[in-house]
Length: 80
Image (cartoon, rainbow, N blue to C red; front, side):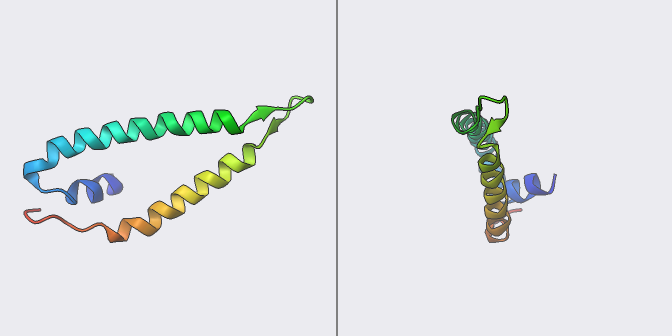
């Protein structure tokens, strides 16, 4: 809920509906892209072990750290 509040506060009430639709579409696209990239990176070795699974974890940590760095930069829109 806190990230959702931060994001919706960045847009004024007049444009909030269209912004939330665009945000939802971008979120779904990101989920699909993450699945595709994960599928490209991870494979199964001859012994049945997953190969390059650690790289997916490192990418996830990087994206989370990036989000934490960017969150304080969001500004509250006028009218909120």
